[in-house]
Amino acid sequence: MLSFVDIIERAETGPYMTETDFDLQWVATTARRLVKEYSLRFNPEEIVPEGEEQADALYAAGLEMATKVGLYCRTTSRIMQFSREEIEAALKAAPKEIIVGQGRDSRLLFARRPDNPRYPVVFGGNPGAPIPEEIYLATVLSYAREPLIDGLDHGAIVIVDGREVRTGSPLEVTATRRELSYLRQGITRCGRPGMPLIAAESSATALGDLAVAHPDYLRTCDVHLVPILSELKTDYHNLAKVANFVEYGGYNGNLPNPMVGGYAGGAEAAAITTVAAFMLGTLVNQAHLHLCHPVHIRYTSTSTPEVMWVINLVGRAFARHSPLILLGDIFATNGAGTAELLFEVAANTIANVTGGMHLLGVAATNGKLPHASGLETRLMAEVGRAVVDRRLTYGRANELILQLLSHYQHTFAQPLLGQPFNEIYDLARIEPVAEWQRKYEVVRDKLASLGLF
Image 1 (tube, rainbow, N blue to C red):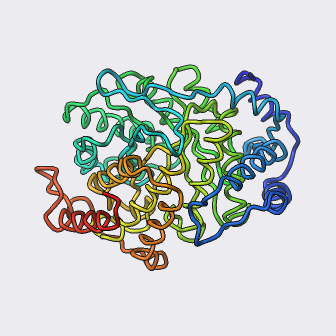
Image 2: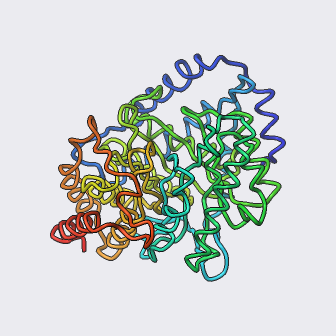
């Protein structure tokens, strides 16, 4: 295995290339060639493919992409290149299970298979979204009080005492420490002080990670995120996050953000790029687990047929060839308070769990607004368990997703933003208001009529 010092050397001595050339001549050209060579094809009527041929082809194409393209360091304008043997050694050494959290609230995160009889681990929250500080604790409580939610991954504090938290500002330290303080307060108030956290979202640079690497904030049993920038890029800010947690001892979560319709190309190319990003993130980001977060370039959502196909197939590719701990990250188009959001959650969850993923979300309004709550994440957890209990086949999963799509796909161009948290939850009791609870029950009954419950 390469040491982290060896890895950083690749960022300083690798081949020089402009970022534009890397995007167009390296990533795009390679991805599109591999789509043809491995005969990958997205079929909008088969979001969950019946056979495993495409999963096998995708894994091989992703490994070739990782070896051929490498990871671009924007800070040095150099390509970090790794041999197939180095990448495969990192995948072989990657953990197949880890314990996150503490005591009775700890959970075993494991490399799932699509047919695994164990329930997926569920992280609740509104990841990536800006959350006003005055309601941050209340929103945390709405998730932590849900018994089926195992851990938290919540949004960012972007305003501190009336001042915007700008990237690289010292206020990133303040905001991230406040984020962790509220998270720790919330889980303690709910009687779940050892609940695992995926956190430090209030800082775009390494400042926040450095500031909360302390037992009073982000514990060594918790997870922080290290992005891989679109497509297949990193920088010294993100590599500093890795270095900090390699020394501190916490868990590194690899977070690629492939774009369906971006530089790499359509769904097939984005799937290849996602596989390559997981492989390179295992090595460069020293990842213990991975968040599967491809999004549609126009709609910035995971709810489109193309993106759900990518997530499902990527999970199956790794389950068959190199099991990793994967979490399916749900970024939904619509906001809390709408039935459409609940149908999105159900479709995403079926695609994720039948792809061998654990569950994370729900980022309503694609993480743009604080229009989210614990109720839709309760449904995510319930659907995740139902997929396991019903032993959904690929064919049946595909049928259900196509049915659910008809309830929300008309909103991609004009999302229903729903309502902010303080309008859909009673802030004193931290319970859904009657109308939001009613919509949840109507959708749940609909899912039951489809045979899911």
